[in-house]
Each structure stands twice: as structure tokens, then as C-alpha cells.
Amino acid sequence: SGCNGGGTSSSASSIQFLAAGESGTILISYDGINWLSESSGTTNQLNAVGYIKPWNKFLATGQNGTILSSVDGFNWVTESSNTRAGLYDFTYNAAANKLLIAGTNGIVMTSGDGVNWESQLATSNSVNLYSIAYNNGFIAVGTKSTILTSNNGSTWTSLQSPLQVFYSSVQYQQNKFITVGTGGAIATSTDGVLFERQISGTTADLHDVIYGNSQNIIIGAHGVILSSADM
Image (cartoon, rainbow, N blue to C red; front, top):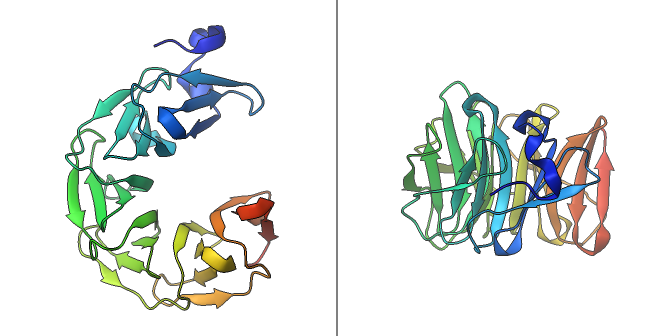
């Protein structure tokens, strides 16, 4: 499939933003203002999309075990995951050349090339894992106050959660792991072992955390946006 709006002459390296969502939607943008729709080849909901620089390819994950890859951002190929689990956030460890995807039913998917995937049960199959991050070890979070840690991406250990919540996102930024979730939950860890509760000042469900302009930015329900320079 070509890029709508006559964008096929632009290179993948100039794509600055990607978005993915319902019914297999993939959007790309070169400036963050004008967006072009690409054909993903699936109608499954897509939950995450990003670029894996060492592999020179884009990756998208979604419901029903969906994993898509693209070398140019325009033409997408469905990879065989051999799972029907919902697949969400992913993270890449350059030292081990290993990419991990967080999934439902306690599943974590692992690959060293983005084509061949292995499924492992990281925790109880009653737990859905929605986000995963890496810094000298992996941290995965999800439902039932679940926070997991792994040094190698294969053997997982449960960590003590300071909150009884549903965690939706974890990121490593500003020398710490930051995880957010339901009811305004924020927990942070500098060592990837001990997580401490932070006061958010809101009871809104918090969905994602990013870093930009020297600020930790947290996005939540009902239009809630939180920012902190030193969370």
C-alpha cells in the first residue's frame, strides 16, 4: 500500500510521529500536524507502535496476538506470534538485542529479530500486562497491582506494590522507573526493586507517562495532564 496524499516519495527516516488504534488504524506524520493513513492489513485494534532503530524497522502490536512490522512505515507485514493474547507496550534491550512485548493472560513475547517470536508466562494467566520498560533489567506492570522484574527477560519475579491498583504504563526516565495507573496512582523506583508511592493530587485514572522539555508528563482520563520536573 502506498502512503495517502502523495507521500510515497518521502523516506522512512523522515517520519517523525506514528499513531495506532482501533480497526488496525496506523497514521504517520512528518511534522506532527499533517497525518497520513496507512493500510496495516488488519482490522484488529492496535495498542502500540514504534521504531526499533537497530533493526531499522517499525513495529506495531495489538489484539488477538497481532504483531506488524514495516521497513518503511508504509507497507506493513503481519508476523506470526502464535498467540491470541492482546499485545501492548514493548521495549528493546540493545545489549542483548532482545525486544519484549507485554501481553494479556500473563504473557510476555520475546524476539531477537522482530520475525521469530517466543511466548512465555511471566506471571499468573489471570493478570494482564500492559506496559514494559528496560534499564539494567526489565520492569513489567499490569492488573492486580502487578509489578514484575527480570534481569534477562526470561525469569520474572514479583515486586511489592505500594498501591492496590491497575497499572497502565511504566517508563524509565530521569534515572528512575515511573509507573502510573487507576485512581491517580503514581509509583517510582530508582533501583528497579523498591517502588514508592507518589502523591498525584488527582483521583483520575492515569494512562501514560512520557518525558519531554525537561518534564515528566502524565496523561489521564477526563483531560488530566500532570507534569513534574523531579518526580
